[in-house]
Image 1 (cartoon, helix red, strand yellow):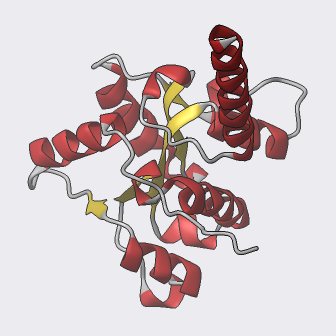
Image 2: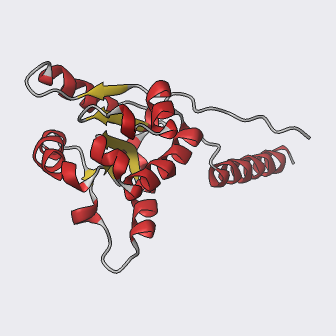
Amino acid sequence: MLNCQANIWILIYLFRVSNWKRKGYIRLNSSESFEYDAFVIYCDSDRKWVHFELLKRLEEIDLKVCVHYRDFDVGESITDNITNYVGKSWKVIVVMSNNFTKSEWCQWELHLVQERRRRYGKDVLVLIMQSQIDSSHMTNSIRSLLDTTPHVQYQQGLGEDLFWSVITKAVMKPFKDPPTVLKCC
């Protein structure tokens, strides 16, 4: 009788945990369950820096990075690909620049990852300020993001080793406790 009751409680517990996971309430603290270590959002005009600097540095230390030009599924819509691959990635790296702020696609992708940030906390994003954003291109949402999320400024030659060290550690760092919402009756 006692063994039967224990089995029932275990089944109830497993049902609740699977229900919580389905609703996104279980904390993610391991990158092992993700296909990619990072998904990179960037403007096409920053492609050269992303491909020859960022990807080269991250992939030479065996991080698996998702970028659209080589990893997206052919025949799928761009919006479906972005949504799917962001979900398959442990972290999202956002490479910000003036050109980034002008791109509607980049703004759409940024809004998409903001939802992920709300669910899992600010550690889900790794913000890189690849070039300073002019005040004329600064939107309220980007200003808010920069005010509430740590970001790193890239500057060639000056502190580059420290920059790459910070980026690498940020991609590999586990999430802290995400924001929680208490539901009332």
